Length: 459
Image (cartoon, rainbow, N blue to C red; front, side, top):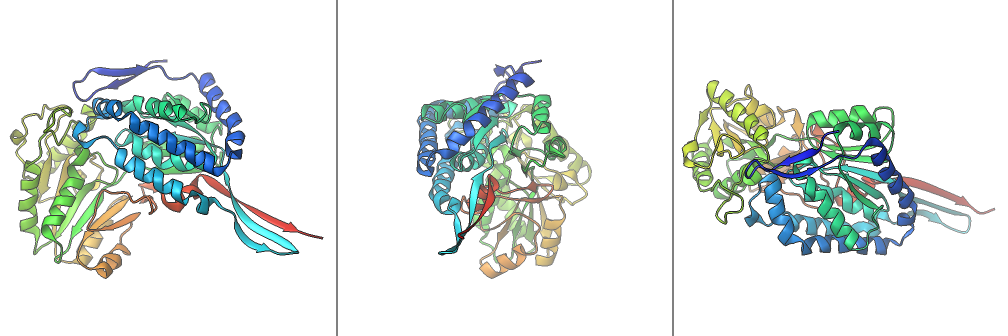
């Protein structure tokens, strides 16, 4: 068994190294989680909520360690302060709605019958977290799972190995028992073996389509419920009545923030012909204002991609598109930190079409293609011409138009005049190759619990 190495994108060094658990050791860890689950679920809901919130509070106290550590692991500039805003907001909201969402729903309570629907914890929840927003994506499932009475086993991505350790450290320090929330280091073979053995009662995976397919194959025949968020090619549509400056600012930020490594980042944009030229001109100026550099430098707004392999995929997509006629609008020389490796200059492409990979396959990097459209119908057809369906961003001043267009788009979330954002009160979900399942909102609690019906009769 080989150690799992975390290669820092900042300088290419081995930042961390951990030995994965053997199958026997991993099986024993899951067994401890299962043994601890009933007692954890038996604690009062208010106590579980308090402990989970205390765990997140402890994580906040570790900010001076977590933020630079995250930069070393996946390259996000430290100026952005980690992921604490979303972590705190999502925790607060899920804690706030827990009592009402998990409360039994009474159908009848009379002198003859008591009939009600209850929610019951699934048991052991397995979270396979990604590297791009490792704290946020973990919190999405970890918080409702623990609050609802499940125990949790977390496998962090190899690119962000230390995230799981920090979360476990914070939650254990706050009083969450060690067996109730465990961080484990696993290789792919052991992960698949555990799922095949029906070790878990729910598996939440965020990652690639190929990874999601592997999870589904491993779970085949076990009837283990799965939550799969597998990627996207999220579009933006700028209508003729859009606020141009606001659209440029938000859509370019959605395309470039975190070096384009956002699950719901903007990867393709369709602009009404009346605004197209101005939108492109302003977008180029916006992107040129970015500063690509070492994530620890105060003026860096764009850090390296998490791994030079990921940057190579984006470079290949850009080169293929240009060879097929696309026009790049950003001179890489404007970003001298581009080293041909993990540090990648951002790019805007025009004269693109849907025969190009850069417009059809997930890029997950700082590149976006922009196309001109004549009307809503053309924009809708292009937005739906994708194997993915996570979010879509519509720019208009009319609620009704946004809703009507949104109703025709095959996606999980419709934004109007927003992009690349998660509202914890709304369900995070997708369709097509983006996967299946729900997190956040009250539906996030339904994903980590099962219904149980009580039909009680007096005689």
